[in-house]
Amino acid sequence: MTKQYNVAVVGATGMVGQKMVYVLHERKFPVKSFKLLASARSADKKINIGSETYTVEELKPGSFDGVDFAFFSAGGDISREMAPEAAKRGSIVIDNSSAFRMDKAVPLVVPEVNPDAVHQHKGIIANPNCSTIQMVVALQPLHKAAPLKRVVAATYQAVSGAGREAVDELQEQCRAHFDGKSVKSKRFPLHGANRSYQIAFNLVPQIDVFEYDGYCKEEIKMVNETRKIMGLPDLPVTTTTVRVPVLNCHSIAVNVELQEALTAEKARMLLEKAPGVIVLDDPGSLIYPTPLEADGSDAVFVGRIRPDYSVKHGLNLWVVSDNIRKGAATNSIQIAELLI
Image 1 (cartoon, helix red, strand yellow):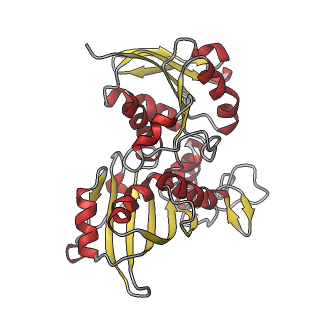
Image 2 (cartoon, rainbow, N blue to C red; image 1 turned 45 degrees about the vertical axis):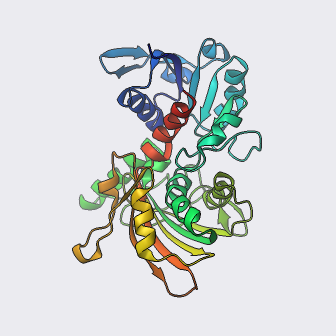
């Protein structure tokens, strides 16, 4: 008989938390019992999982007694406070925030790239940034064939990455625009900022706060996390992250410079065989990935694979993935599946 596990989802009423609950059920994760945890204001809400209805409980340190796997998706502050409590009580924490990603004692895992890292955990495993996940899944098969020399990425990130209220704002702005009403903005570039931009029919070249040298936190995350996951601490990586008026699924234009020759045809063949990748790349038939095609999938879609003639060994890729599924919920659950 397959062993079953007591599972807790922290932040169960949020977009990613709800998707975690859905994907756990969809992938038939061997759950003995579910515990859905959230803030006091969300306690007593009902969530359906298959034919069962569960009541959301208020998150407390004692919530993790007897829990085998605790999936966290409630923000960095909650993770920093409660993840060590869960680990102390015997839970394996898989954390979707940025709280522990760069902690040397915490593995940062993408199962298609560095699966063995899970076994180095001391109770907490970090789930990477959504954009980093899809990029490294596409980069890894190329790097194994011809080592990476440099990576340049520009992201086109959907509003779902900023939460349910951000999705609502995009939809409300679109309705207001077509109804001839005033468009109200408050969540872009981020909620509480001293300036806000309309996202409908617009682009906002900032995700998260600015840190130093004009780089925003999302850009720095992608650089540092890519190096850690791929085990390439000195890899030159530079990124520009942009919020776009797309409901779901992030896209990335990735330019790679390699240390050895690798043709676009060979790269395409490698990616077609790579785990977790679906290649959609037929320019003659106008076939390439789009966010609508990737929506609801756990795959990383790659297309527009072509040479970069401006450097000796260069390639360009277009990479699209569902940021709520593979970029958050599914990757977390795949990490747990490696452990069981």
